[in-house]
Amino acid sequence: MERTFLMVKPDGVQRGLIGEIVGRFEKKGFKLVAGKLVTVSKEQAKAHYAEHEGKPFFDSLITFITSGPVFAMVWEGDDIIELSRMVIGKTKVTEALPGTIRGDYAAHTPFNLIHGSDSPESAEREIANFFDESELVLYAKSIATWV
Ligand code: RTP
Ligand code: MG
Image (cartoon, rainbow, N blue to C red):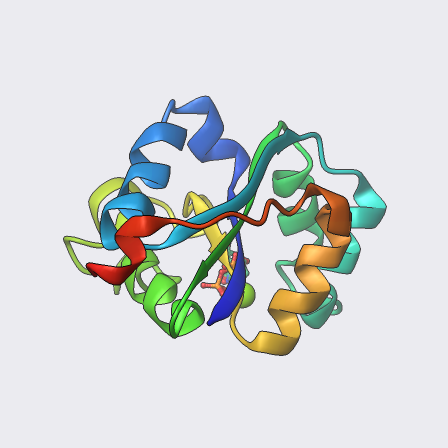
């Protein structure tokens, strides 16, 4: 069982897509472990996107991600990091296929609605950047045996 950090970005919150996005992961069969609305601080945003520091889009990315609340989540499931990125779709809107979240709803590349961790190491670091251990809810989900 693997965990990932998923975050509806400020554009997704403003466009009223939290429910649609959460629904896709619920229907896929993943298990929600934590979720909350967060106003991201500059420091938190820079830590989250540390891998992109120095790139031409870094400053605008930090401005974007701190421009309004995000919906931060932890989800659990087998191979969830790879599978959730498939549900999310490619970074560039011109490459994001219909059927994916970005392919269905995103029209301009920086505003691609949702973030998903790209490795177990990133997931652990990103979860710790947004959640205390005590906020992760441990519970049994019976449907897990059916998907
Ligand atoms: P994310 O980290 O947000 O889940 O997205 P990702 O893995 O698909 O893409 P990544 O390469 O990590 O880029 C992080 C976010 O930066 C913005 N971006 N803008 N203007 C550009 O060329 C450019 N490239 C990336 C996007 O918002 C992207 O999701
Ligand atoms: Mg990324």
